[in-house]
Image (cartoon, rainbow, N blue to C red; front, side):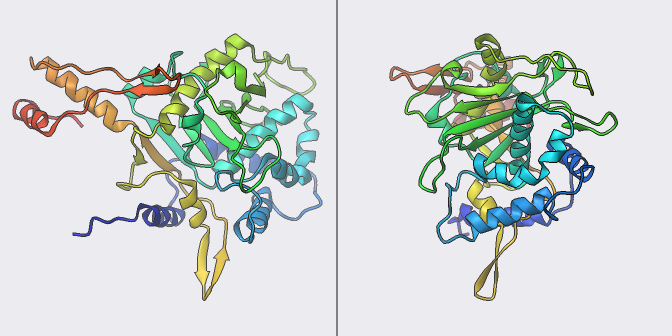
Length: 381
């Protein structure tokens, strides 16, 4: 049996297989993108005959994929500055709804996150035990540059069960790495954009737009920082539901609300980016998320020449986060209920003596301990 598996090639193959897959469960970001389609179809004619997705495809292929010297770093799908030029022909759809600068920027952040996520569609589902342990205001709620540098894809979607903001459900969060300043192919992205997935972006029935609350954080740092110190700008939502001719009362991020809302989210982001935490496909053993695999799936060979086609997956890619941690904790709990002695730490973040963020995990059972346990109890899955 050959055990020398090339996981990069396998990941690219899986990405291609999923491109040809049938549509599965419709996740909320997919519904949001359909809402965007409805919005742009309802707008007056523009100076382009392309849809927003076609325009994205042509610009990405020209300036990044098929370019001898790509204009920006591989870890970024499309820089913010370039997104502005992509969305420019469609701006009448936004101005027709009387969006002022604050609302326009919020809409722009959400659109760029959704359009980036469209080409990877990674949904990150965190093990229930691990989610409960780290989704709180503890040491994990900081910007850890060591972890951010392990960010897996251009844009990720993290499910956030039982999470509410402004009394409404937050179904998940879109997190995107990008540039707020000048971009270069040899320069790492300098910011992190986080958009809360809440209301439908466009309400066709009432012909109103509902930009999601968002925040942008500076990642151009050599050391870990508090959210307050790396926060750049954002939009905290409105007190009143936005309706025609009724001005909304804006909310602004304060130090307190910034920590309350984004502290738990950063704890989850750091968990996903933690090298010792297992993140793998729910459908393909050994496959891990990577923006390199997604980009490789855009290229096929036609004769001796590459053929470039930016194609979105037809169904989301599900990534399981820390499932082994939760399973191991449940095994130890089971062992305890059967009178077997054990000691095992809980999953938690802590700051080490060098001031760096680290994670403590439940100890993994040895092979001998596992055999002993299977002799007396049924192993849960």
